[in-house]
Amino acid sequence: MAETIYQGNILYSTSYDELKVIPNGYILVKDGFIEDVCETLDEKHKRIEVVDYKDKLIIPAFSDLHIHAPQYPQRGIGMDCLLFDWLNNYTFPQESNFQNSDYARSIYAKLIRDLIANGTFQLSLFTTIHYGACDTLFRMLHEAGLYAYTGITNMDRNSTDYYVDTTKDSLEKTERFIQEHQYSKTVKPILTPRFAPTCTKELMLGLGELARKYDLGLQTHLVESRAEAAWAKELFPEYASDGEIYEKCGLLQGSGPKIFAHVIFPTDTEERILKEYSGIAVHCPDATSSITAGIMPLNEMHKKGVTIALGTDVGACHFMGVYHQVARAVQISKMKEFYEEGQKRIMLANAFYLATVNGASIFNRIGKLEKGYRFNALVIDNMLDEEYNTSLSDALERFCYSGDDRNIVARYLDGKLIDPEEVYQRLVNIRV
Ligand code: GUN
Ligand code: FE
Image (cartoon, rainbow, N blue to C red; front, top):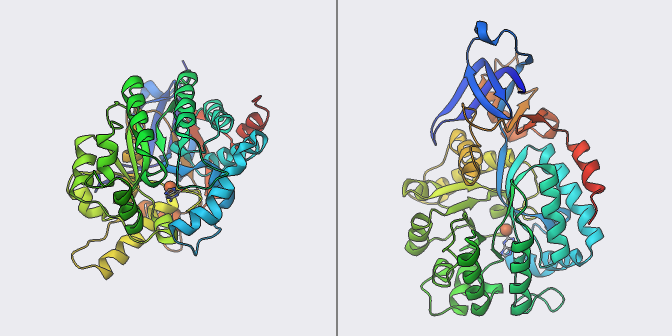
């Protein structure tokens, strides 16, 4: 049995409001799981190897519950557009490149290297409509050992003529993908209708049947902008709002996670659905600031009992690290408080909780540094500053605002030290 003790400053969230800080503590890890967390070592620990991260922070790895894998090459580009122009002028042309599986292999290997470098070990990814590229991504995530959901992206209208499926093709590919991707313990298929405007009712109903038949979850974009919410209503006039389309077409019938990106303009219907089906609303603050119009009413939804996690929404976000989204969530909540009466900002501890505990809630025993949890963790260096007398929670805050992957000096996935470059070398050699 592999046993190791990690010594360092331990920080993780125990609740929305509470950040637990254990200065110079010890984490005992056995076979990938945390066996004990303590402030001092006793006699029975003496024979176990101790890895010394004394001057550093040990924190949980991050979860990115909304990222578009094929948009990795376009991050930071077209950021002056609003949603529809950005989709038509940048995103659909870029995603259509994934027809070419060699291109997919090259991009997805780099994406995963960058995700691991930035400490994102749990995630839910959008893809494209191309079977080969989606299969490549799934295999690479599996090979890397990441915890993930992904699926074929569905769209059968309102895209472009060079990047759209027929309803029949979209459903057939999706079912084949589900059937052929049951082999991984850490990566699972999920239904991925892009958003209501690019999916016909026939397609939605077909996906609803697959949700029931294979007991699947769903990821999509929901009430992302005023224009999007209005267009969805116009295209599906028989339903009260965007969220009801998924409910009435049967897409919420499976037991898998229900992940809704953005949720900037929720009506009572969206809030009811999120709660009734244990859905997760994913806040992507950089993307929201760049290409969409509005800021999620995060504090209000949290108070009403909606579960909220964080996402990057790359390529609508220019940074890979979820830790930057922790900082940005605080920043834009202050904007909302400043400009809108009755809104209240969130604190760093709140956002960190969303990025670690809530984000990992769709996976098993991940997100905290407590007994029984998987040791998916990061070691952070160079954020403590003697001249300023930085506290440990200051150091975490500073990392979220101004850190980058160079400050992550060790990464543990299921208790194993992983190196992004070594994983990359394995991925580029995968046979597809
Ligand atoms: N809505 C539909 N497609 C997309 C996308 O690719 N990104 C974002 N942010 N919103 C979308
Ligand atoms: Fe998105």
